[in-house]
Length: 196
Length: 196
Image 1 (cartoon, rainbow over the protein chains, first blue to last red):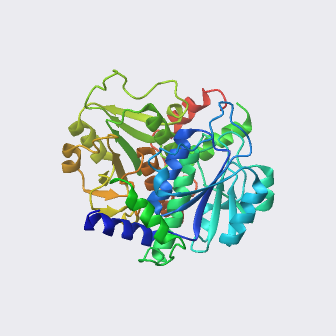
Image 2: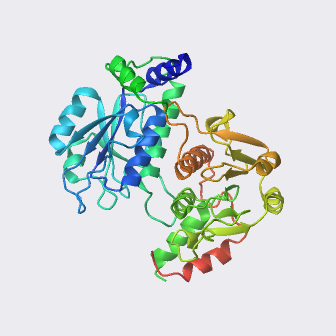
Image 3: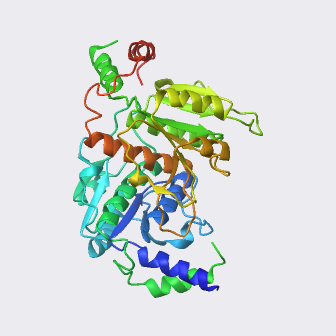
């Protein structure tokens, strides 16, 4: 590994946001999953949760281990809401679901500088009632157009970049502001990959 | 048309942002084009510019007239940069290109409450040199991850939702803050569509 490469890995791991995560509940479209993972990497989210409580028609479970976004993230897989939320509760102070289309808190009224997990739901059905009942609240991306909803990868990008904006102002992207407990293991895993 | 439908059309047209537009230069992937248009509608962008200076390999020019996002927007098509920018200059105070990957102004340092056109480039090559040379500046979406770029529909969503956030605070979404010169024609066109 070149010294520049080692510096790059350090720089990225030191900006990872230990208090921010995304949960995808029954998101089945591989393009959406890949786009969400790519944006998570871009804003410094290390841990994501893939919650699949139902088997998609084509039997495909969403994450291909060969995907290039996948390898930079730590993916936690669950097949039931209760266990997933129990683990989230041990790591994050609050859990918000996006229930697109329902009137609720605007994404711009969420304080993203606190430790928070954001749950995004299935492309057609949204977040399940079980997940909404177990969460602390619900937020929407405000919309003023004719078409009633946004693509999930767009909604997720808008939300986590608003988190980025707030956290940047709060200094949470200063080097190692939120050290990841597994930083050393993650770095040695990354170092084993060939260049990006 | 029901009275609710008429009210909905009024509400949407009165929130359209006459001082904000998106230009897609040689964007060829129909999924990207559709996602960008859908997000434009969501933040109240009425006018978009489709600039194609090269014929895609499959001969497909990007906009299907049957697309459901398309019908709520006013699409201006150009096949050369100079003419496109000449028209933009008559309508917008400034033109910024996104040249992803190059160090330049952060999207969060742009004042989106001014009248502005945002140019997004081809998925592989980015914005052309000709367009960059004719623009007032260049901005990027900040990224702190391992993967060096964002999908164009995600980059566009992050930029225009930051515009939404700033403009909302500035009162530009108050009813009819930026009346569209063709509001009456647009409303009667919309009224001719079946409910969606």
